[in-house]
Amino acid sequence: MKTTKFFSALLVLLLTLSCSKSSDEGEIQDQEIAIEGVWLLRDITDINLEGNPLPTEVSQEIRAFVELILNEGCEMMVFEFRPDKSVILEQYDVNDFNPTEEEVEYIVNCANIDTFNGTWDLQENQLTISGEDDESSSFSIRLQSSIMILEDVPLGAILPIDGQGDFVFEKLGNG
Image (cartoon, rainbow, N blue to C red; front, side):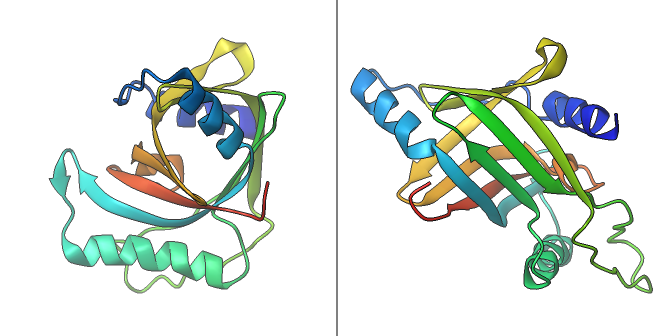
């Protein structure tokens, strides 16, 4: 139940982001093959709040928080895109992160994982993920070798703060 509500919120946050066009159908098919596999969130770049860059301190705190979780051996967000167009999303549940209270020490618990199962589709650099109740979310994607960048993703997808950033994923092995 919690996972469904969480993913519903994620879908709402990720709707209607821009995409670039590609007229080469072979390129699209190659991208679909390239996206298949397991992708781990490794960084968040170009962080902004309502179109304005975040203060450097806040941006650094967010990136340090993601790094803290990764250094503890947890995964912040993992996508597994399968050839049958199914997708599994696992993400760390950050239920007590508050970047404005310096006195709070965050304790990492790798068991705090939410899981979502759905389907995916890739059309002209536009990735659409669909879930239960026909909810779907689309966003721009850039694939560069073993790097996948989801552009302008709301930070609320993984952190309890407003703003957007580019989520940088690294592909594990050959998928």
